[in-house]
Image (cartoon, rainbow, N blue to C red):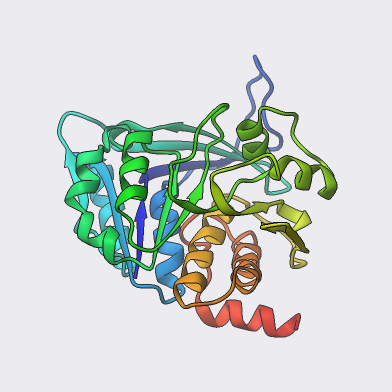
Length: 299
């Protein structure tokens, strides 16, 4: 079983010719509404790949909450530990996607910011029995620290969105930053080359292994003194929104099934690559047969 502790957001997505600079107004295309939030995205990504997934989080007491809870439940996610929060809006994300598929995102946390350590204590059984627990930074640190402490299996921590100086919880087995998040964790400039990424990742402590996602440059795995660069699968991206979440969800499934970190990273890379060829966050996550087909085609 996999337990994800994290956020649920209603995503409002607009296509734009380019991302605006400060003071600029850009005319975009028709807006679309999708179920999102890093926690929900990762939970749905894992469920679509066959994982048994429980999601721990908070929503408001509004129409958006109904949409998000039903969306997660409809994808096979156990929503027993999704709590309603009175007089607080459900989280929202405002997303602009440019012509090359790159996105910029503003997140209004709403109820996500009210998730507490006590909420995780209430979900202790789901955390203790999970083979893999997945955490991110769209909920308060206190909730993440409690969840990591209560987890009975492997703990994956995706430090997104990037927060300079953030301290990952204790008991993390695998840290999964991208370039921006790696720079925030180390307090250094964003690394560009693989060598720079490797050097920055080696500054991190507190986790047994680090897996840096590099978009079109693939992923870099550091485990002990060893490092391995895994190239990206060649695809034509349409929308990168949710690709990192598809990666984390797929990684959780592969690790819960007993695969090695290298095998899990390749599986997750294939899932993320497929997700970039579709729009939206949760709806873009692939199913198991699609990932298997992509891997078989590049064996």
